[in-house]
Length: 328
Length: 118
Image (tube, rainbow over all chains, first blue to last red; front, top):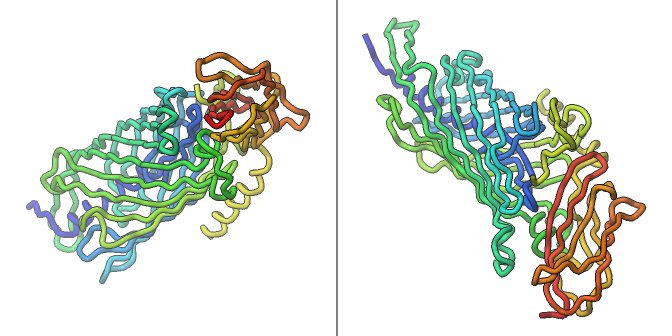
């Protein structure tokens, strides 16, 4: 007997959201020509790098009816193997408070990413990275929505600074955009579960997901060092106001999930120090299925290549000088 | 517990912040994007970190692409680069710099300045 219980639908909704959020915990930073792309909090940015994001803390409400409150604490370590190839490992601990239900907590599935730097073009401040993100099924707690199946997500990330606009564009040249588009393929097309009380069998279709998003950022460091030095206070010259957006659209095998797009738009700000950055953003759901109200996310991000340039901060098989933030 | 770990990570970052990092342009004279009344005889670039003089340099070109500098050298403090200029008429000038920081990171950049208020 196949039933599709509301619980499984809620779990599927949670899974959609947590599938989206862990992807967002893959971070990178880079310099391409004049342009420094900071590590963004919700989508990946376009460079392979040696870095550590810890902690990333977010608090938001889920798209369930009624909404559950979710607290995520995550970390991710990224390591270059060669100048252009790197891997990353990340994990997220979640605490979910659903009205009328016991609090659930535990780790989400372990995530890894294999990343390759496809392009870095200094003149046009353009970078592109290809990656294969893998969420390892069964490595997390089902109580917080961790899937029992592995998901593979080939993904392209790109970034483009507008510094190559004519000089007459002036302050507009400090703008940059980044983007990310991935296709998440579940290792299993459906998940079967048995209710321990009733014995009912539930089969849930696991959709294939288009994961997409981007950011619009205005770099005060760029404005000062490449456009015009306004003599502003040092702290202002290290800020990057940013708006990130991330979306998930089920595109096939959608019998249970439907095809509605969920996601969030995240306005915030990043402070860039010499060896670290700190960022904080609001999490604004785009519709009710994406969340009940506004949440918040904050992150401390460490540039290991700057902190430990001669040890863990450089590629294992480096071809020359440390080039992570070099423009060529 | 998690809070303590986060705090430790923050202190670790703050503590190492002064140790090393990529060398970025902190400021320049004439200033980035500025207009100066009279032509300078030299340009000074100040970086956020010490740099290696042997692997660092800068060039200055006028609006028609002709080079107007006569060479660059890094000062004893290793954070300043002096670029000597030929006598230059009013106009717009583009500076291209590249440096290797003492911890072996390469960076580069460019900016404009204007002489004579054109």
